[in-house]
Amino acid sequence: VQLQASGGGLVQPGGSLRLSCAARGFTFRFVDMAWYRQAPGRQRELVATISSDHSTNVIDSVRGRFTISRDNIKRTMYLQMNSLKLEDTAVYYCNKQTPGTYWGRGTLVTVSS
Image 1 (spheres, helix red, strand yellow):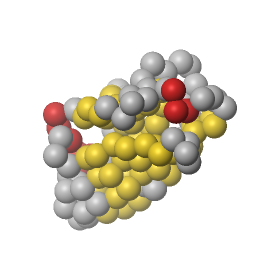
Image 2 (cartoon, rainbow, N blue to C red; image 1 turned 60 degrees about the vertical axis):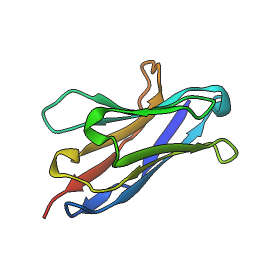
Image 3 (cartoon, rainbow, N blue to C red; image 1 turned 45 degrees about the horizontal axis):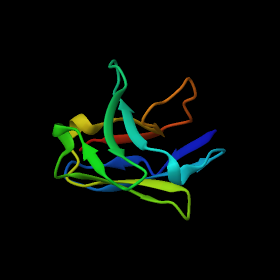
Image 4 (cartoon, rainbow, N blue to C red; image 1 turned 90 degrees about the vertical axis):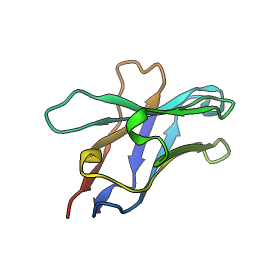
């Protein structure tokens, strides 16, 4: 399994970013996937999920601002983040909805004025 998140960066409050997750080493189109994040000093938390049939769900704190999607042809998952807030600052990771011990490298999102 290989999972590589990218697209993070420094953005002002109210700004937008689009994260990408390139997946290799498993049959991506059959696997339910998710985005997670870990803020400084906090535990990793689930942010958004997308099933193999493209059903989606997000946590309350990002509902209406974040959108998760996937492209099974490209074996890539996305997280469109709009109206970013200071509290969205975290390292964002992609993984299966039932992750094992493997966690790929995340991408840092910093929301700051």
